[in-house]
Image (tube, rainbow, N blue to C red; front, side, top):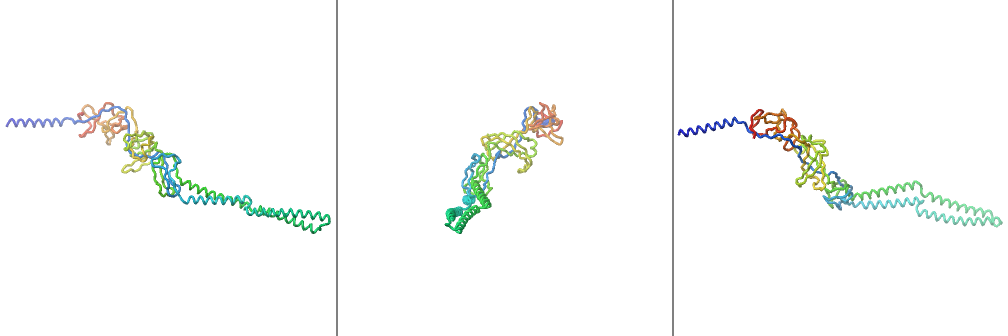
Length: 400
């Protein structure tokens, strides 16, 4: 019994001694060594693609869509037929306008010729008859003059023949004046104006007919088609959207605190979950002019330009973006979790012998896992990583 009691007492003493010894041992802490390497600072976020250049195709007249000449995803040349819009009243307007042009043209031609053909024909016939009567009367007058010289005709007969001769001359002169007075200069001017009005109306009707055929304003890919044959459209309705997809703009949403890291010209890599093995390269085209809400985030739209020669990336795709904001060659780096911060600024816990000391540092650029240390540390220094036991400056530690 005494031996058992001794054994128990010895074991208790050992446990107590082990506990006291363990309590006096410094806590274990993991450390990372400060090293030099090239560090690339990247900013990962999301965005949305859109064509580099695009134009909306809209109906210029209202009517029924009788034909759609393009398909969504189809490449079209500038001027290619996108759709035909039918308006039954167009041909009737053209026919009416052509008839008015023909009527106005005929009227002007008649006035420029001196008058209406029927009136001119009547005047010409009367003039010809008067000239014939004048010739006959001239012969009669000449004959009476010769007879008068031979005392075979009286002066009264000669005077009467002369009066008739003068009468026919006056008739011919009257017909000539009547011919010239059929058309006034103002009548010709008015007829020309009526013809111009009719021609303008015809051109407008023909233009409306041309507008019924809707053509592609630029070369590109139809990435949005909004109509089908049989649809009724009004002037200004959207029919399709055409854009260049061999080059894209990507609107990348960058959180407001990170915008200071982004600069125009920074390289960008775009990925798309639908094609996980593909990468698209580009650069930052311009920074945002304003901040806007995106769900619970406050972001700026950073516009990037990327090359898409195979057109694999479609317009409107939600993409992932990685902007390379900076590169530091041969930089001193530590793991991000080793960098600490409080009211006194940025610092690390530096291993100095068997204890740690607080060392203020100036951080530079950072990647996903590492941060550059511009000043405060040297290559080969060891800095503490986070532990379960809170660390304090001057505390003894056991490096793990």
